[in-house]
Image (cartoon, rainbow, N blue to C red; front, side):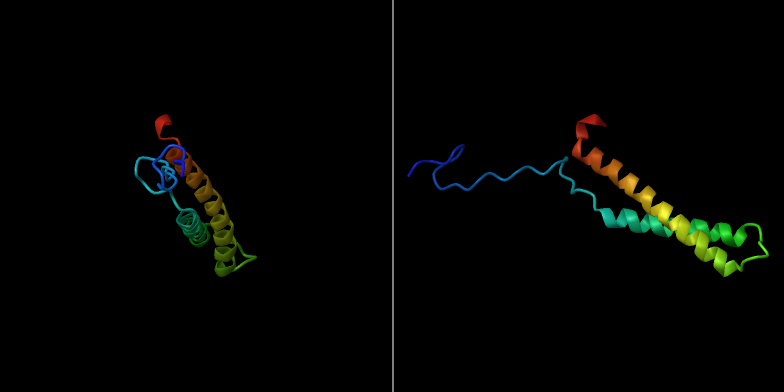
Length: 94
């Protein structure tokens, strides 16, 4: 039986090294959820404490601005995740 490349006979394949200095890779869902929650809170705050409009109720404004800002928060959370993940993959470029 011939030895495997780079190892002893019978030794298994070498494990790939995890990127980064011993830290786990970031997970996407916490960034998206926190962006959505913060965005909704900002939008709801603008609706509640903003100027009154005679054509819509406060609840309609909270829903509209809350959902709009939640979507923007998800986008911002995704961008923050991409930056954090990129820095995790390239630790020498900090």
